[in-house]
Length: 58
Image (cartoon, rainbow, N blue to C red):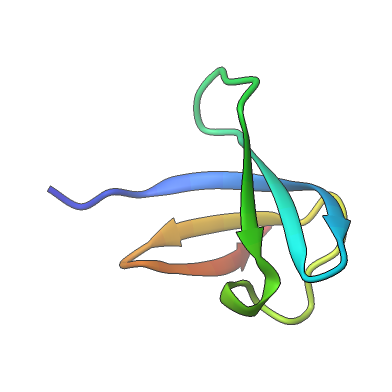
């Protein structure tokens, strides 16, 4: 089974970004190192996580 999740960048704090899951109802925030994320993210960017990688989605 492949794990696929959708997140939105809530905020960026230095070398880290706070992500909120948007494919389900959740108030949890996930702290992720920016080195693991696409370089062109900004607050509000939507991301798809699959195969242990993040990519920007519309």
